[in-house]
Length: 298
Image (cartoon, rainbow, N blue to C red; front, side, top):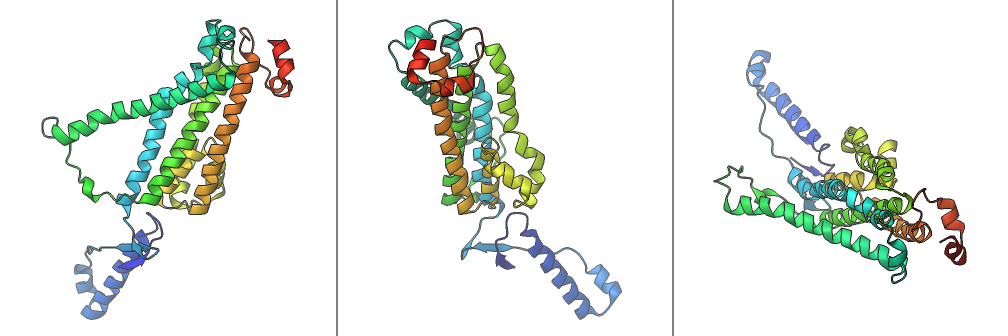
């Protein structure tokens, strides 16, 4: 059967229609209900779907973009503690005032964020290297199943969109956790907020069935555009082919805009509360105070 690509799960209707047509044709040709029952075994149906005039890859084209979700979870879970403590260590060690005499807060926070990106990239390489080496050179010795990687379909547009969402989501969570660390006086108090941030990346799984079957549902749309649930929801939809170009553009804009806003918020909070060793920084006061007011407070 040949048909328009309706998504990974909606394409199953083609097989159902083909089976129904085949059954009716067999019944009409045989002309006997008893013989028709004997002949009513399932047929093997090869479904080919097309999107914009090009044959789509089906499930094998969904796997590569969905790997971005796995990478995102791994990075956040492994690096969340370092993101949070990156601005807390200097406060707990009582050395922030000395650091700020030689570095501007913007440069300091920029260095921390870039370092976290570098650590994330390094960890991806470190964790992926043994798997790749084992698969390529020691597959028989360690009994790794022989996956046919040639069957995977790497479509450029979904892969690029997935990478941009991954990068924007990681930047948003990094700058947010850095900002939280700038507000809190100790790592113990900041730990409660880290739990909330980790929980936010698992929120989309409460609507996972709707993400698969009905991506236009209201709750799925909310999860798609809410910044802290957007990365996972959008990457899953991108892998399944239900995230169109307009939606992808909006999601990417939300993530990168949010990351930039949280970066400058983190700089402002760190500048205002860099020596707030015993109490949380009042965010409203930090944002409303001017540069001279901040200097007097410090």
